[in-house]
Length: 211
Image 1 (cartoon, rainbow, N blue to C red):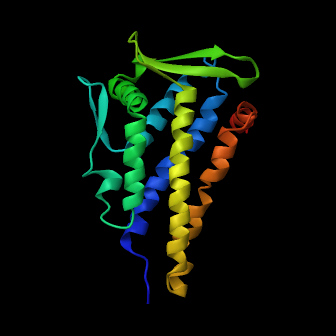
Image 2 (image 1 turned 30 degrees about the vertical axis):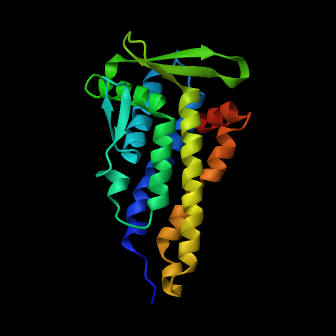
Image 3 (image 1 turned 135 degrees about the vertical axis):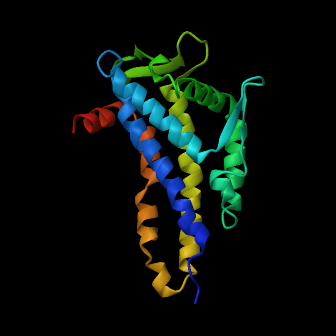
């Protein structure tokens, strides 16, 4: 009998972190910095918090870089996801500057969230291009930066979902129908990327926020 190994159960929470990031990003897109400032700042804090639950790291303020903590979080899962860990390391290396800025602003606002500053720059049918910073410091991050990071993370986890499907097919019949499989597949990162890349993203976000 081929049973489900523990690493499959352990990885579910990291899918949930990315799923939550996507859902908050969809809501953030169409918000108005004049009327929705509290919600905008809360979504940024939520997104950045889940991002660094997914990517356990520390910020080196001297070098302005982040360092992965390979004894924490997803890296502490012992087997089954070596390729995924490698993809995450590559992702962090390629996006270190942006990730450092997000981490820096998140750390600064952790104890003083009122100093998080959100500004919107209206750009026609695409809505407001929101930019985040801490008080009057020069480092800032905008919505499109966040979107690019999430699209790439979605691609990484789409591949992981495909690998999990292959693993599922190797299991004994009773374990092929284990509830976690449907739950993992319900977090459809392929659809999320289609929406994030759509010209109608602002309209989709507007409808989500209305209802």
